[in-house]
Image (cartoon, rainbow, N blue to C red; front, side):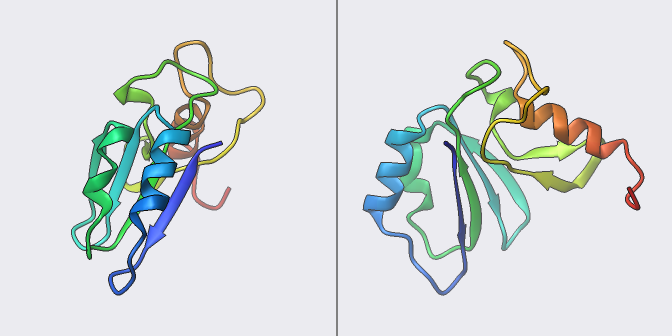
Amino acid sequence: MCIIIVKSKDKKVSQSVLRASSLINPHGLGIIWLDTNEVKYHKSKEWSVLDTDRPYIAHFRYATKGKINRDNTHPFECGNNSNELLMHNGTLVGYGSHDLCDSKQLASELGHRPRHQ
């Protein structure tokens, strides 16, 4: 199953945890840098980018649905809402396909729903 790491500015994530996360989840690494709100995508083996003092939320992907590619690497914008991002662990029944990640389909649908729903 995927791994999500939430790291605050004053904490450190050990290299052994980052390395293990990348080995167990080799299908992509998505990062939201919390000090700039910038989103970046990497290969899982590029985990050393997370060995930093900067705060972030990182998602190491283990593909269960959808192709292994950049387009299916979390986080996903919720529809056209570029300020709303989704990361998810696990498999969503009834979502996704051979090509499309289940979480990406969910993010797209959430982006088109009124927020009160």
